[in-house]
Image 1 (cartoon, helix red, strand yellow):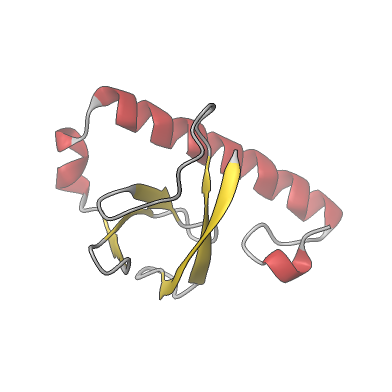
Image 2 (image 1 turned 30 degrees about the vertical axis):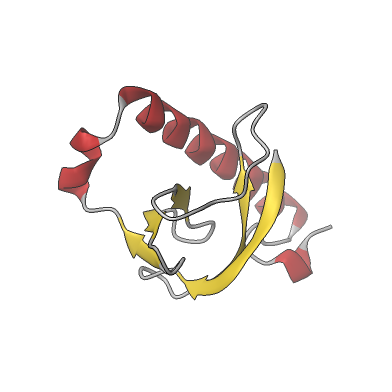
Length: 102
């Protein structure tokens, strides 16, 4: 996993300012680019980066257009985020707030 800075953008669902993205795929060290998918760490909505690196929510009807391996990657990332969130709650820190990380 590697974390990369991105131009600050807000999640359209919850308003969280996103200034970094973590690649959860093993063996991949690239930062995100236009068209790449991400998950909001706070509200867990599936998002995509636009050409200006702003974020838009993926419409539910568009999920069926995604390759199966992409959906599987999103589900793995979502499980990882849920696991980190549970640990964070137990230890009283917020996954979505880097200033709060241990």
